[in-house]
Length: 378
Ligand code: PHE
Image (cartoon, rainbow, N blue to C red):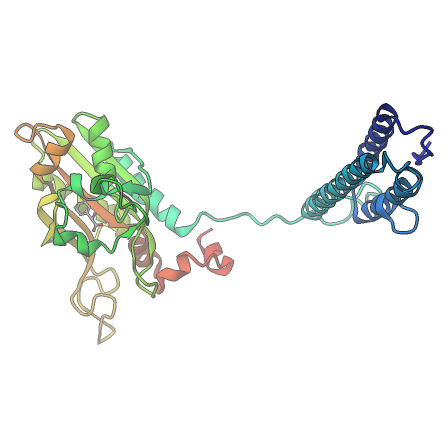
């Protein structure tokens, strides 16, 4: 039988408490049945409806007729009942809204069981997703180095100043840090400078993490996302990806670096591609170089169809990555013996490789999530 409020036969504390807890038990039991906007409205009107809601009955049958000396106590109980009813009504509203969202999201998966099943209807079309071009390119680069015996290491995107800079031979306050457009995390003035957090500006800190946990020989590639304080435009993005490489062993020379990267560029862009190593500077490599590949659009000629090649600014070369021999100072930070080991490192931008490989003219396309762009890589 549906619960109704009855007159109180006496106003002893025991009888008040019993009546109140019986009411609340029914409140909770009935609330279980709420599962849609309609059942919720019925539930709400039944309990707090103005005309004849249960709360109103409590007021009329329990509170109003209470003897004057007990009235304050009955008032407290009434108020408690009122708060609990309101609470249950609000909770049930959230519940049915969540149910509605779930039903909507799954309505095309679970057929409505009340409808007759028509097995002649076409099935539900589920388009197959495509690997994102950045991930696809990253995996291709990793694949080239895996075939050379490299393993994969990853590191955190939120780094300390120590790993992003200091252990990579960027001394505190050195101007080389300015080239990195770093996003620092605010409010860390009380920490020692080397412990302050920032968004990593390159994947090179993973070199340090790797050397801290591995002894030579080391051959790793480190793919990952990084962040720089750069305004977005067709060739810049505040978020992009790199694949870092590190090889440390006895007797590794610049020749090994050249041979490895020349092979990698040919594997990525075709065996006709030539490479050129151009002097450069990075604090953590010495000597350092930028690697250029012969322009894949004009075959390194600098001109195409009688006009200067726009892709290489008519130079015949495209700059692609940074590299160098690991600076002996870096070994000091990870407890390697710089007199016994040597090695090389390199870092290449994944979007840059993807732009060249797939002829994309705006780096922003990688981050806008437009399906019409992305599905071309399926
Ligand atoms: N970390 C450098 C950059 O982001 C690239 C690099 C990596 C250079 C490894 C040399 C060796 O510009």
